[in-house]
Image 1: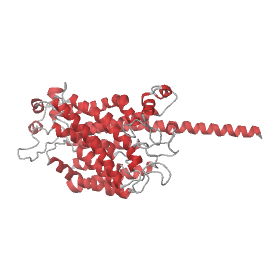
Image 2: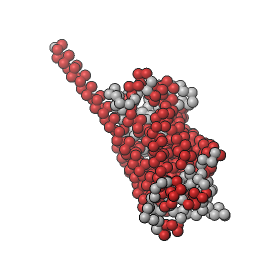
Image 3: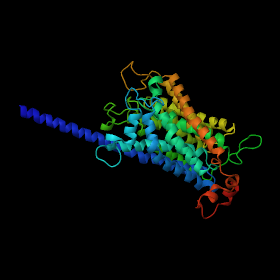
Image 4: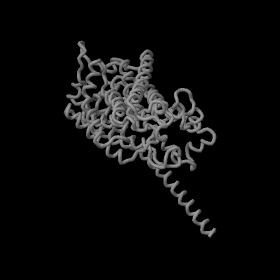
Length: 464
């Protein structure tokens, strides 16, 4: 009998070990796949922004987008990753209730000190930390790409890179630490819930761009003496619309990476898929709601504008407006929220333009305004749902006031550093390209290559 018990015990232990290996491999593969999917977002931004540029600026816009991606990876590694784990309780560097934050924890996880060095680089002790970092690094790169479209055709390359680093490796990371972390003070004290990062990625990036645009100023020829605006068309609308669709493809990876899947690296969560807050989530919910959000945004924008550019922007707005609550909404509600975002999109962009802001691709509206709209709508429709993992009565619940507080904080974390850093760059002559270079085109002045070496068609040249 004792021998049989011992044999059964050994078999159970073997099964548990096998299950643990399977869970870890699944977690590793899951996040590994999110990375190339999110890189598709950058392929989309690349096409989107180059298509939205005039022929004389097409490669310059592409260069800035490529650099935004490239600089985010090392700068997020060297200090952005540390900020996420160190700042959740504020700038106090202390650990929060979940015990996965603070200076000591951040130094261990992000910098790999002491025993935690096993989580850095090539090793066999841990399979998931690197790919989880990769997913977060691509979130950072996305914020920089959001800002890059708003400022095309007149910003200096070095100034742009500095702004991208501040946004992608600091500003949004603070927002994530405060509102997208189990120890985040916005979560624990106010019940802020932003599953798909409508506020802490999109709103922060959108309003960071607004702060930059105020100091950068409009493109030459955008506004008349009486303040009325002229439409400056990009050279390739099909490329722009295709780029927007690629961003939609990449969004599946972006939102997939917002899910915490079971695995040994995520031991503080339950043994089932969860949000970053530890609350339940399923890929089924994402599949229903993302598709409904895309459709709702497109249809809403089509009814109002009939313009393919705004229809595809409406698809982005649909996802962003529902992102905070994709883990909670039912499909019909997701469609309604997304539809309303598609309808208000163009009027909000026009309102901003009428105040002298030249946002070349509508990034402030699509990501900033709609991001805040989405955060607040969750407070309207999901009030009372748990904002964080825990027993009933012991954790904060989602509420309208808390979501408004979160929206205000996200706005400030974007706008203030965007405005201040761009103002400093402006005073140093590092923000705006010289007038002569802008008139001639940034490609012939700044880029040692030609986007269209066979020549510029007469019709395109005339529009420039």
